Image (cartoon, rainbow, N blue to C red; front, side, top):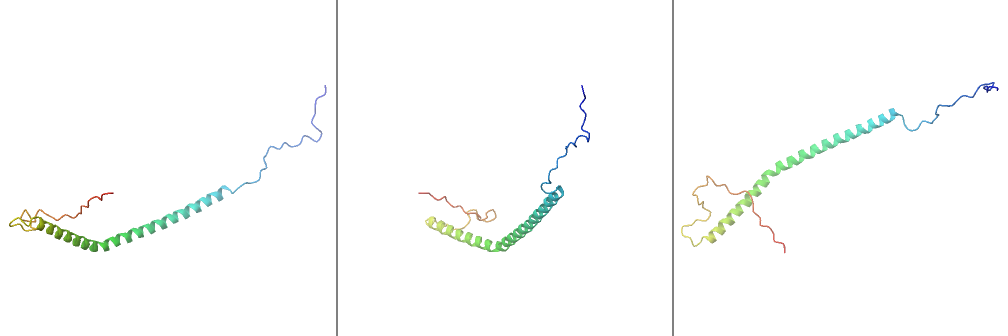
Length: 126
């Protein structure tokens, strides 16, 4: 029996490589893009932090400038409430002899400071 022999010019080359076209950007381009986007994001965060800091400073100074006005308003309100309370006390105690409305029952003001809060009754819902 005769042995099979290769063709006289030899066998054709076996194609084992994959000749695929390049698809998409290279890794270096992707890395550069991510770096640029991250740098822009950090820039925007820094600008936002500066803006927030400026708004906080502005808010703080506006509160500082409003303190005298709010204190005066609170003092006027407290004086009005104390005078109204004295009026109610005088009306209630008008029949009691030797009663002075608004006078401390402790005969001193050492341990008494007028209240700095307002008790508002809850509104009744109909």
